[in-house]
Length: 81
Image (cartoon, rainbow, N blue to C red; front, side, top):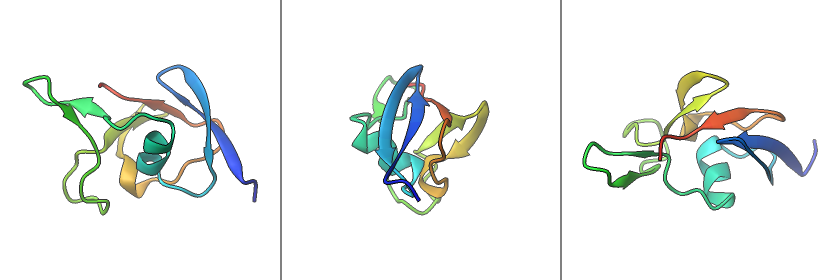
């Protein structure tokens, strides 16, 4: 297994540790917030186990929970934040 994989976050290619969750990869890439609340406040992963739904992102065009999804080479991730 490679030590890192390359993913694209909002159009920018970043290298992140292989095997980590999308939520962890976003933090590693300096992208803490994954979306914005209705009042514009930044929102990010909170519980780490798929309960709070704060880590919702678009992965390859499908909305998924970043804390429950492992990164894969070439993955396309879209954040609303």
